[in-house]
Image 1 (cartoon, rainbow, N blue to C red):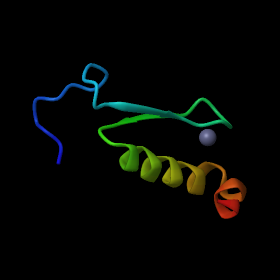
Image 2: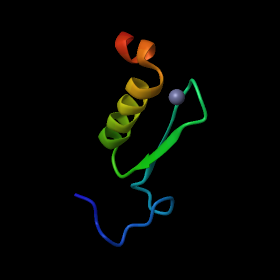
Image 3: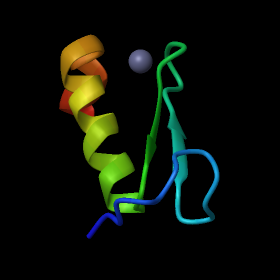
Length: 53
Ligand SMILES: [Zn+2]
């Protein structure tokens, strides 16, 4: 999984995800991790959008 020496925002493996509905953003080491974080954000901040998928 994640390597301890990896720095956020530097490596090519770090992905950035942004919310289309607010200023929220997330960085994660894999596409799936970005998706999970974004789904959590939607559920908490935009429940209507989350319910629609
Ligand atoms: Zn949002």
